[in-house]
Length: 366
Image (cartoon, rainbow, N blue to C red; front, side, top):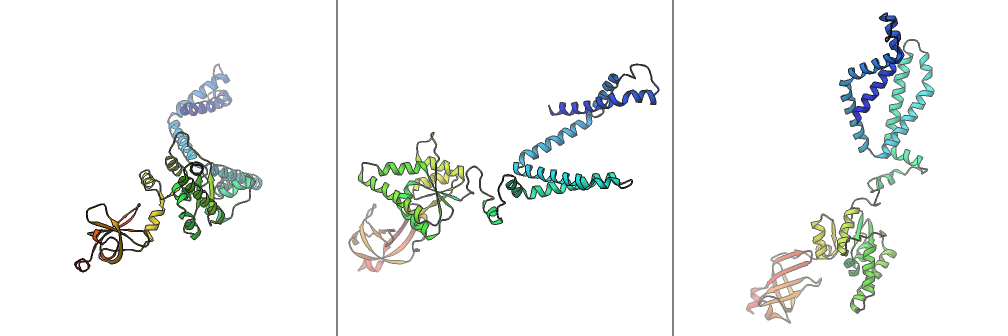
């Protein structure tokens, strides 16, 4: 279709040139005064045919150039095109106003005017392109943003309103847990805390449950949200977004995180794994809590109180002050008392930290 249009363009040019100049050319140059050489219709047909045949090789190059230009324009943001066009038009207007006097220069006046016009048009195009944000804001009736605001919002997605990684989506478990409020108050969590509408609905259903335990957990979650909105140092936003084709709240949360390029804040081990499998960034509160626990290395000695027996034969279980479980091989006989143990290994997972130890040989002998 494009090639036909280019052929038609050259044909029209040839027809116009033939209609205008062919009769005079045949009469005055070739001295042919008989018909059909003096006919303008014959001249138009002849001019169109000649120009179409002689420009066949040029059509392919011109078509490739147009397609290249079209591809570039499709990849260029609309704001850039508009601002560049506005700048070029202003440059042409300036050239029209101030270069007409150049035409009066003898011999070189017309070439200089043509060159200066092209130069001003190019300068206007470049200025409009580099100042595109200010040009668009001025024509939109807004004042230009300050440089710090532009640097802050230049990566913000136009559809979602968030920059990549800015949104922190809270799931139901981390809201009910309550530690998120303390974490926000410390200032370690930045960006925007996003609470999806479907998470709020789930919290409301839990708070309205007939089961006393569930009802208390739901109300605790709503109280935590109120505390975050009232006292937090970060912006909190309730996002009215839902996915009717998905039933599970966790699946909705993962899809929403993908759409807005946000991070999921949770302490749910299974949701943590699902997010990792689907390429969604996760901030696990349990991982943070485990990272802040005192480091215990193999070979260290601890004095602990054995609380109960373990799952395996002859095992005892003790706990550190921060709740870390210690599995003691051969510690069953020490249940109810304190014992010096030697750490053998440490297992770290998103579900928590587990320490394996055995009683000191001296204590065992006594």
